[in-house]
Image 1 (spheres, rainbow, N blue to C red):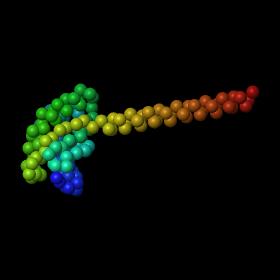
Image 2 (cartoon, rainbow, N blue to C red):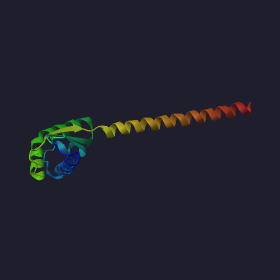
Image 3 (cartoon, one colour):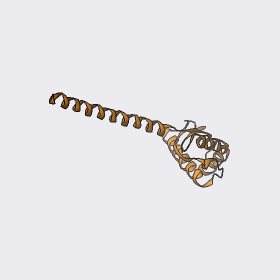
Image 4 (tube, rainbow, N blue to C red):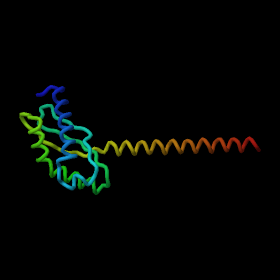
Length: 135
């Protein structure tokens, strides 16, 4: 079992290498359908499995297409990771879409909407008080 420091270091190296591959080396047009960035890499304690979380900007169709392209490129990516990082065993690679940005955006939008509603309510209460005071 690898130390947590080593696991974190391997995860960071995998993140960097996969990011470079996404930008320069993967030729599949489906991967270019949406703007892709690696947000996080989780590596198991025994360095046998890795989950690569990607954020994809684009329509739902482009996201599905990009995920299909990444799944198809998994063998290439795994082989390249093995060669570049010189690990004894190359971990299995699984891509997962990271939707945390979308969830954060939605929460922020709801908070902004709530803030606007509160402002409108306080303005209408002030106007109502002014109207009652003039009568």
